[in-house]
Image (cartoon, rainbow, N blue to C red; front, side, top):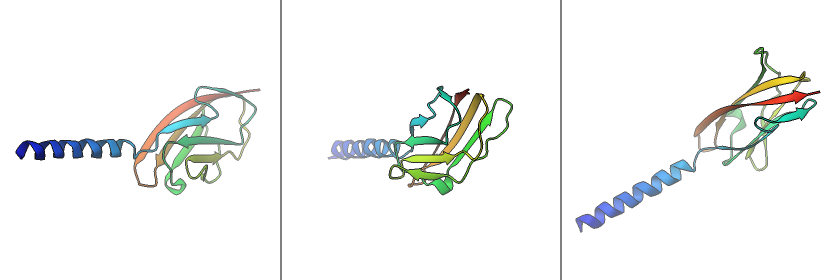
Amino acid sequence: MRSSAIIALAAGALVALAADAHAHALLQHADPPVGGVVHGTPDAVRLQFSERVEPALCAVTIEDDAHHGAPLAALTTANDGLTLVAPLRAHLASGVYHVQWRAISVDTHQTQGAFVFRVAP
């Protein structure tokens, strides 16, 4: 009886850990692509996540190598809330851009990350 209770408790803990691991919005795809090159200014940075995100609680910044920020419009979502959209409000000159993001999934778990892309003429 005691070993059955221990096994049940261990199994429950594994299920809880597995459920928690899947409750975070992990970056699946980015457009412009992570480390990629685009020709001309993109209209937005789109970040697709593994879980739905809440745009009002998320943050995205884009800076060039000189740490000048690119102006962004309000964040929105697409693709049933899986894609965070950061519309650009200005032209990006040729160069390397650093994207930093913080995503809050609809169940309030936070993830964050960063990547670069390059704008070519």
